[in-house]
Amino acid sequence: MACYWARIPRLIFGASSHDVATYGFEDLQFYREAAQPIERRSLREETTDGVLRDQAVEVLRKWADMLPSPVEPKF
Image 1 (tube, rainbow, N blue to C red):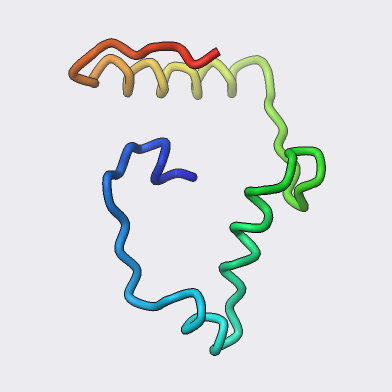
Image 2 (image 1 turned 90 degrees about the vertical axis):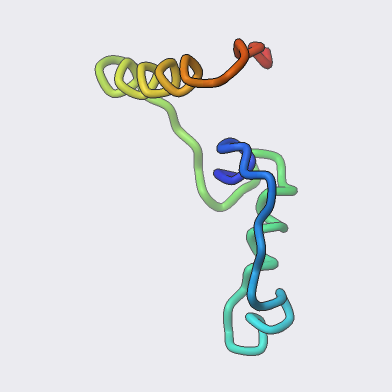
């Protein structure tokens, strides 16, 4: 998901999902998790208020200010 957020145009893997599964990794589980509704995922998402949120929003604002064109809100 971070690659999509960072707008990375291309991601190259040196090994396939089959290759990594052969050696005990389960990257297919990531795809299964992402396809689930948020409330059914094994990793819970939580947000916070206060100073931590203010700091995170400031980082996002600075990133958006560096983009070549204005950001269009997605809500």
